[in-house]
Image (cartoon, rainbow, N blue to C red; front, side, top):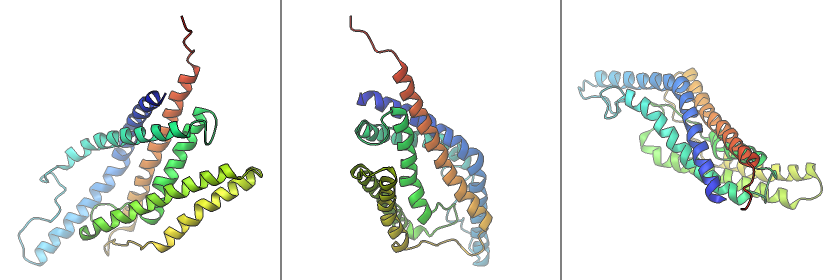
Length: 249
């Protein structure tokens, strides 16, 4: 059964990744192009002001090592591979949760698990460390920023696991169960939001509208992916449940 779930996860992840790639291509890439243009303008202005003739430090245009047209085409490859990886992990986790936690039906569990994963892995870290376009962020701090983001992801996962375990132990009624689970989830998440250091490296003069639109589109891409993945995985589970069982010969 695990092998069957794994195949479902890989297929649903690939399709959801391509759907999310289409969303990012149509709505996200224009914001990336605008941010890159701002970065290159700033680099050119700096070179002129210091009378240096060397090229900008970060070349994202057609003369870059990987040109923008190639990057845009590779977007679908990246989101597809991302979907396959996520789908495989999700299927293994789903197999462990099946019949033990959450809704008893595979369809309900698939939708609930996908929504929970989006909240824990995407939304929780995004609130503290939202995505930033090119020209935002100091290259010297990329390792620190990555580590902080990973810590926030781990906090979200740990809080979710604790909340699920709490919900299973509370048997005094649904309201008490969900109240305790929500509290157990929010306490460590809110503590991490407050205690972890903030990251604010937006350069002065960077358009606030472009920054906001990029971040909304980035979050929207993840929302589209997880919504599509949850629906596709649930649909595959539903079709498998409707399939008549083989009769022994």
